[in-house]
Amino acid sequence: MTIKKIKISNFKSFKNQEVELGKFNILIGANASGKSSFIQVFRFIRDIANHGLDNAISMQGGVEFLRNVNISSSENFSLEFISDEEYKRVATRTKEMGLLGVKIYNTSYKFSLKFKKKGSGFEIIEDQLSQKFYVIKFERKKKKTEEKERIGEGEIRLSNVKGKINISLDLPEKVPLKKEDIIPSFLKEERLTPRNILLEPPFPFFLMPPLFGEIAIYDFDPKLPKKATPITGKAELEEDGSNLSIILKNIIETKNKERELSNFVRDLLPFVDDLDVEKFADKSLLFKLREIYSKKQYLPASLISDGTINITALIIAIYFERKRLTIIEEPERNIHPYLISKIVNMMKDASQKKQIIVTTHNPEVVKHASLEDILLVTRDKEGFSNICRPTEKTEIKTFLENEIGIEELYVQNLLGL
Ligand SMILES: Nc1ncnc2c1ncn2[C@@H]1O[C@H](COP(=O)(O)OP(=O)(O)OP(=O)(O)O)[C@@H](O)[C@H]1O
Ligand SMILES: [Mg+2]
Image 1 (cartoon, rainbow, N blue to C red):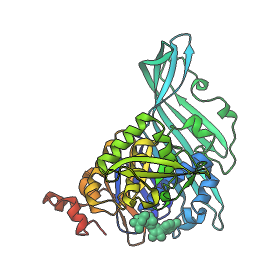
Image 2: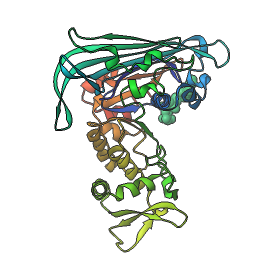
Image 3: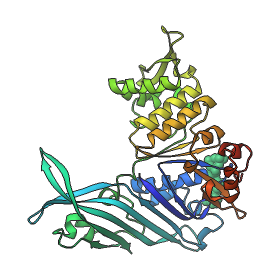
Image 4: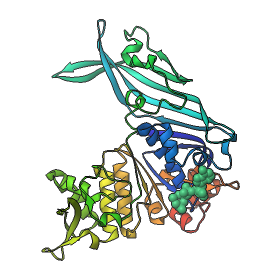
């Protein structure tokens, strides 16, 4: 699991919202209910971790559009999340107990901004991180460090108060570890500017779970991969799928990966015989496809169906991109209803290893999902978005008790649309 819970206040269309997430999450709701706004929270976290708070705010359209336009500066913005990602921190050799280290198992982080009455100014009024950990005794075996036993639990708390980092640490009794063994000592000396927080570089690298730079958000446009891509593009799949040819080329170069990809693609699209990538004289790449109907001739990407492109991009995003949290807007776009059940199962299966969030308008997706995976987004009378689990709504519960399937509720427009 990665992000377990998220709380936001005064962000986009949300006033105050708390959401618990599972491994697989499907957001449903009417147009303009707030699904994409919710996805923006994750983009914001990722952008802060990669580019800093100022840039991340700018990428959300500036302070005036980061916060809710109606609440504006009258309330603070805040963002809080809890992650249960487990990861190990440096091991230290101690005289008394040998090689010791810690394994973080719970990270909770919160920051709040108070806005100036006028203009785009703000003040950071809260910025704190707390992490629970196990103290682990390690053992070196054949040049590998292995976990031997857990010898206790502790907690680290860091807070940024007007630029100064305060650190406190709870350690189990009789464990010969010091603050410096767990927290990089340079942090004590570090001073943040009034517009810096603990979630931005360089701190995530030392302090946060590896998750935050590893959030992928996709909103595929199948028309884009039909055009050639310069070979100088990124090695990871772009949000809109435009560099699909580069990613395909990298996969096809490794035999095992190529086999794995063709198996996935053929399972969904049995007419696909081979996928390949062509390199042109101007150093651009474009993928092509051979169908079982005409084995001699490849079809250039421009002639490939939108659904085929979307399915290929989905398979790559789900199984080949090494991201811990994958978010996909409307993955069912251009896909035949029969295949949607397979796509849902594919995402369910992949969510055992990585957390997945999708938005959808499609009853087929809902039909093949489990009820506990669904999050319903609605807007209240004042225009604020609300996210709830359909099972929390009594009227829906009554319907479900009468054995009406959730997809029927959706088709009949009973999910508050
Ligand atoms: N800063 C903001 N303050 C107030 N409202 C906002 C802000 N930013 C966006 N909104 C509103 O939030 C609403 C939700 O938009 P969003 O894009 O999340 O909808 P959606 O559920 O993804 O819809 P669709 O299914 O059509 O994609 C929109 O009406 C938008 O105008
Ligand atoms: Mg949307």
